[in-house]
Amino acid sequence: HWLELDKNPGDDYIGLFREPKILYQEIAQKLPFYFDSSEHFLVNDTCYIMTSHTQSLMALAAALNSTLFRCCFKDNFPENAGNTYRAKKAFFDKISIKKPTAGQAALFEKLVPLVQHAKRIGEDTPASFLEDLIDACVMECYFREHMAERDLLFHDDVSRLLGISHTKARSHEEEANGSDLLSSPEFLRAFVASCETSPIRNRLLRIPTASPDLLAIIKAEGKV
Image (cartoon, rainbow, N blue to C red; front, side, top):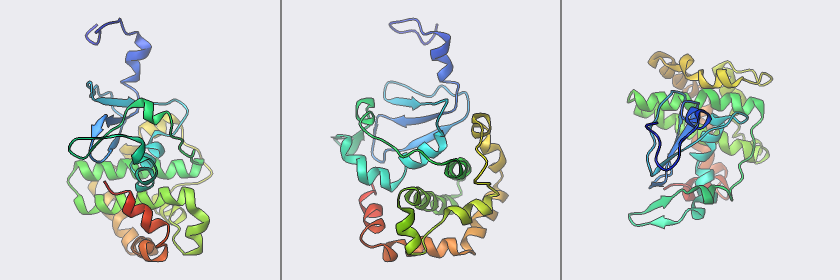
């Protein structure tokens, strides 16, 4: 087989590459993680994949790309020359990520393909806004009470704009195909415009001043 190096890979192993997966570089400056729902074989000796039949990969991608993850765990990955980090599996084994609820997973399963689509088509301003929004939604998973006290909650308002029911868990097939619903530039622009004319945008802007001792520190320390 064309993948064979020192052993003969079985069909089950090869099939993992065709499944929905998170792609990431072993050596990178910003620790980027990308959700791929296509049958792409894109890895080499410094690029790896994560896949799962039981967990929401888009929710995991959101958490791994967040400033919260980098603030808490970037020191787990050793630095190389050129201000890069080395993300080896041995270091991931020491990290635990909070499992999202069904409603939280449904939210990220729409936001993650939306921001990736914005980047693919060169919509830089909406992409930047969506990155900040997803980052805030990840923080809400961990600090909901703290954020509620400061009127910094996002999940419910964003879910309403996206038409998400928090009581309906999505199947893995729906997760893999979720980006199909968000593939038009018109939907992207309309969604971002709706956020910007709602309290969502103001809450994003207030995060550093409303939570200077927690969320502001996370955002500052999580920049790489």
